[in-house]
Length: 243
Image (cartoon, rainbow, N blue to C red; front, side, top):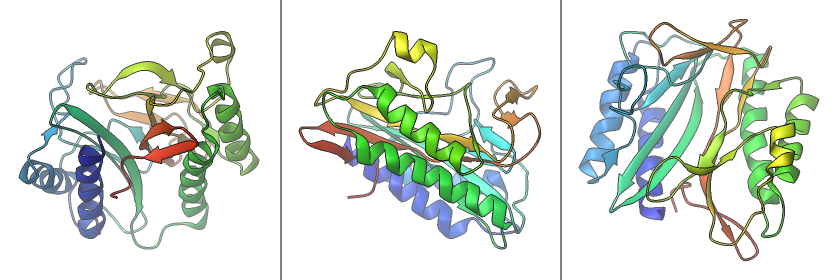
């Protein structure tokens, strides 16, 4: 899984290098495909079942788009934030991670949103230990995000990952009655794709007519960060950090 994770990180690095004003999301998607295909990996997103098979190699979500953005003719502009979510399979094992790229002169509030969301992910990683319950981690994530004036998306959560991309359990970034009823005890060897999504305004989202692209209801910006993380004997091991 670490090998798959290295490939995902290479895709993210290449996207950071080319993501500038004037480029289209399709050009970013094409370059992401080139990177993982040359590494001998299979993309996990294109053709994924849904209302229609997902048409892109990467999920590229710009500004108010939360997740599942489809690559196309949209031109990236100065001040945009661009979420890049990439999943690949290599030798039967999966890696999945997301980052949000700030392009040019991003508004201070939006920059803070990205920084806070990335730190929410860091809080989760830092607090993982065998024997802890996920609700403890989720509470820390939610409390920090809301203390910084951003909201946590409720409609989409992280997931288990291994030989397939989406495995049990569901891994929310917030505490709910459902989580408390069906809490997850962290055990050594469990691997989770942890992916906080935070909005500058309301946590409410909706899906566009394409059946995939999720946007904030109030059209305010959203940020998304994700790592594939293994629970180890004494903490967490991030498998998608490029090591």
